[in-house]
Length: 140
Image (cartoon, rainbow, N blue to C red; front, side):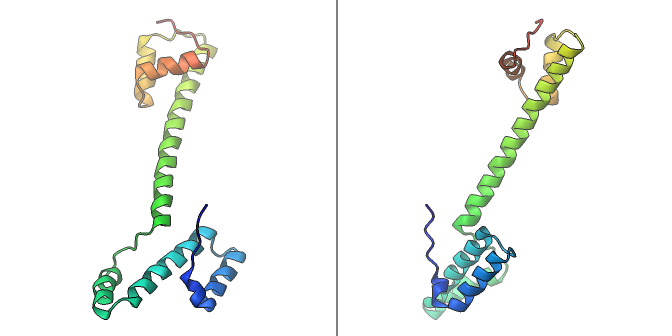
């Protein structure tokens, strides 16, 4: 369960504005929580002694991107999702090619397996496993 601790509650105008933007669909929950997280980070910086604030704010104001937990989790999930999607596409392409050979009553020999593997960036063993898992008999 995600803990929502908004320091923005100290400034109800900000919280109210974010709630309105979310309800109207202009921002989603992720963006709202991200803004709150960044606001909390900035407020923590401001609360420190002036020298510490200056040391931390200058790199941020100079263009450094504030890294926060929600953004890191989101980016990791996106990367993993893209990788899984690519892998799924490769597997589906290999299955489709194998099925096309079966429909056309063409033999699936070692060279065909090697070509399918190469085209889909898979190993020949992986293509054999895919064929077996999908009930496709091989002639090699």
